[in-house]
Length: 269
Figure 1 (cartoon, one colour):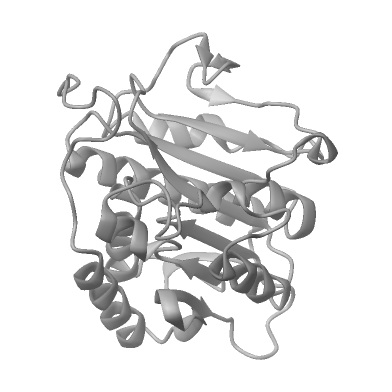
Figure 2 (cartoon, one colour; figure 1 turned 180 degrees about the horizontal axis):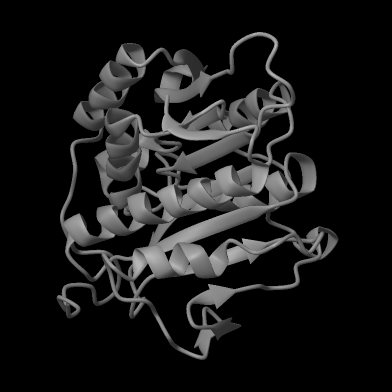
């Protein structure tokens, strides 16, 4: 599989109708028993959740977000596929934001309608939608694992960021192994200015030194101790990027399930 060569000064690939994608997500969510909340009704930002049955003992909790940049269409499509497939391990508690920036997709640009990069807005939020998302996150319990789905229009292949301050057993290699079946991995020694090991970046980030926080930095500071940002390569076919993100999510969940057994069954539910 080769790069298409479409992206020169930004993303110039396939577009999606975000309203139709979100309608599909809602249909699948309702069909499979998810709770649906309006995080910010004005921007149509939705939060989906599915809790374990009452009495479950400390169920593992997974959070997934995507669509924070309006020029990264593979993420919302991957969220739609995951919701439709409904192949989650039984006993897993789930939170999913299928698109954090619908206006960006309508405009086909990274930022929202006000020109704000929402993925730099999680320390002192300027966007009401970010402030509403933070408030929603604060109402949720801590997560065992967070996955943020992204794309990189310049990348030579798929890569990921790992934030793992407690040095838990890494999920990175298992994710990359699964993704490699659907999409090339970026094997560059340096990606986005960070040292990379066969597609895995593990930057040492001090939140206090960052004046602008991405969502992942807020999550690792306030909601989780294990987070992965999955970056699909935007200059490859959209179908391959979607498949890569779905494979990455499923691989991460599968490894979480095995780690937390017997609390989790690998039977879908």
